[in-house]
Length: 407
Image (cartoon, rainbow, N blue to C red; front, side, top):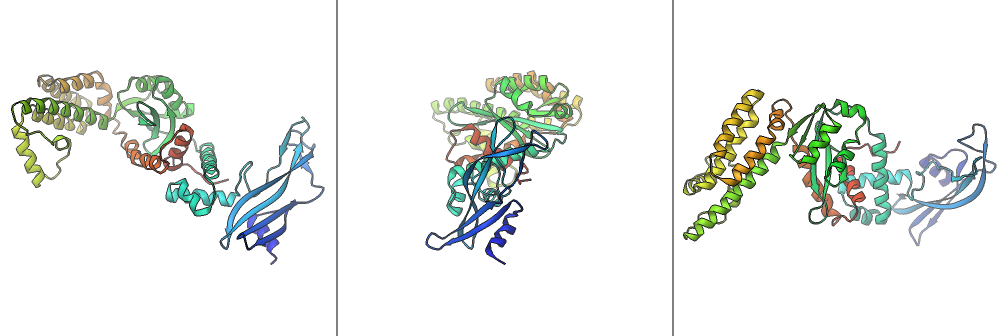
């Protein structure tokens, strides 16, 4: 088989395209495949059935292809630019590459596989010799293709959460499909308009099919959910509630620690994380030491006990029983004389319906929280992001479970 016929089969060429020449350049370790177009080819006008499009000019283009025996392979071709009946001109599509792409379809597929394997543009660039911008463009095109091909299957449970982006109080809002454990989309900001934009990425039919949405007690998210998903129950995420209670316990600890230091007692020094840690094995030396610490301080121990006892609330499956437990717990908390605990309790009382909805919809943002480590790895590999577009692209590429393959 001639080398021209070989590359015609490898590239899947058919009339009017054919391989004119294959050049082996040993010094530069390169193979150049020159593709030609048969003369007198008739190009149709897509806007006028049976109308010919006239060749206006020719554009010399090159594409990077998969290596041939470790030789860099370049595809060269002069692509006709045709003029349509309405006077507009356009470059014709070629079968071996997407429009405006700098790599072939096979090379693009290989780049996607490498990115999925090593999660770093810099590593892929070093491995195959493509520049950062070319690989980044492949990733952007893959995500756009995946979003356009995303099937519109019903989504029952959603998660709405925020993630940090950049420096300071810079946030993005993340919508996740809880049942499929995938990120649906990301938008900058966490205001009402941002949340509305995010929920509007769902089709009207999908919005109607949502039965519950898990979220923090952020007012903008709650207002958006009530507006866009009026039939869906708002379920306040238990991990965020645990975070608020842990922060309250730590504030109590800091206050009591200052009082004890004035008395010359350093019992609470270096114990911050002991009050936040879950002592699963009650018989371990660490658990025994913590029990001793628990008996030596009063206010922090009381706050910790209230925090731990609230975990029982999530075990109830009857809304009335859960309500009775919450009432009893909140009464104890309000009598505790611990201001940080009382502040959190008042907040929980204001959002009690969303807490009680957990008895019906056993959903949390655990999957969304699980994406945090993946997102942190993405940020670390990229050394941070200056562009939200690139940040969103990476998140959807690695966490969106999109169909990135070419059609």
